[in-house]
Image (cartoon, rainbow, N blue to C red):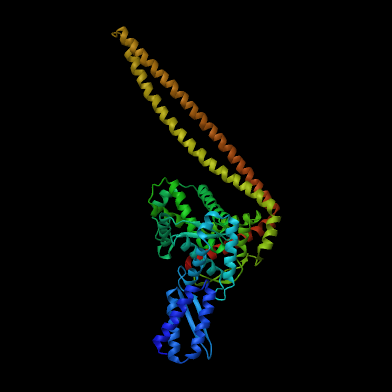
Length: 494
């Protein structure tokens, strides 16, 4: 058989099986066996080149790099995905989803039925001899779902207990996120905001408010990504820094009443992230540990992720550390749970006292703003009194003139009475404002006293539980370090 005829025979054979078979595995087995039979009768060097060319070209058109091995009387095809978003695996799964009327299922079937369906689908793919990586399997199914439902390639599809959770792509959001990604690159570090602009933004955000903002943002991200959508730890860590910077940027824009360009706010948010990076990951560690304390399975998976193994992520071999603290103690889910159980009451008391102090400081800032505002109003009204006093003296002198007729004298008397009435109203307002200032100052004293008492209680608890608190602090620091290390590496390799 001539080379061109052999090439076309192989192409036609593979294409026919591709159209007829229902799964990639049956397609793979059928084509490989048929081509083996042809190879047995055409095993010279030139024929092997024609066979290899037909196989590699067909697979390349379907997002796969095929490596073909020839032996004496055998032949093997080793497929490797090159196009993550469009390949032959996705084609077969899309066919299956269409055949099973998946789009209608999503609209009409209960969640339990959809979960069972995906359970079976994932199980069948895990048994495939050509697919070993669970992340790859999820990517295949994710992209097949997008094709079946007609979603944009940039729309997000997550799996919540094997049920797909779909988040449509927001082009405005991604435009901003793209800018943030670009600004995070090392070439921009150190070239962000000039000191005056940064100082202007700082004036809107007090340190306690900033600390609260970071804590709340971290908790919001965990609640949405981990607890509500149950995103896998790898997906969560891969998107954490971007989500945090984006949320902080949005909140700062609101706090500054959108007085700065979004590009400036993004730069500020990134600088803040870099400056408070270690603190941020300690807070993330604390939030995850709180989730474990509340027996949240999703929080537990964030811990078991740290298994000390090397994982291939986005084509890059990434080392996942084991949680090891400063004393060289290795932490796992079991001893973390034991520690958290024994330290629960101590942690709860400390957290309540610290929250009380933070709330008090927020209230102090609010009261200080109120006092400053009221003092300004008092000064303004005292100026009004001075103006009225001048008017009063002018009218009194006018009234004392002897050449006035009765009508003019009465009109002047009326104006004098109106001035006196205005003074009374303003003086009452000043008295009210001064009372408010006095009350606010008194409230400030009470808050400061309560903070002193809370700090004293914290000091006593710490003194009485030094060893236990240090153990928990070591754990939090170690987990925070692992989180920062993994997220940073994932960001660098993205």
